[in-house]
Amino acid sequence: GHRVVVRFQQEAWAEVRDADNRLLLSQKNPAGAVQVVAGKPPFKMIISNAAAVQLEYDGRNIDLQPHTRVDVARLTLE
Image (tube, rainbow, N blue to C red):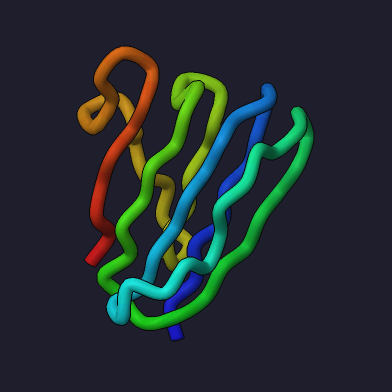
């Protein structure tokens, strides 16, 4: 499967759903936390405090800035 790594530099909420709309991650994460989820894309993601979160998909860094409105990023990773 494909792998998503979410790194939290500050506290932030993250939600990740897979192609079957199964909830893979849905929780508030403390600063310093790293979450790894794997499954079948596309992955639908919602991330709060997006400026303080780093996202990696299959080894590539994903820029959250273009997907962020009022500090919340909403995106789909194919």
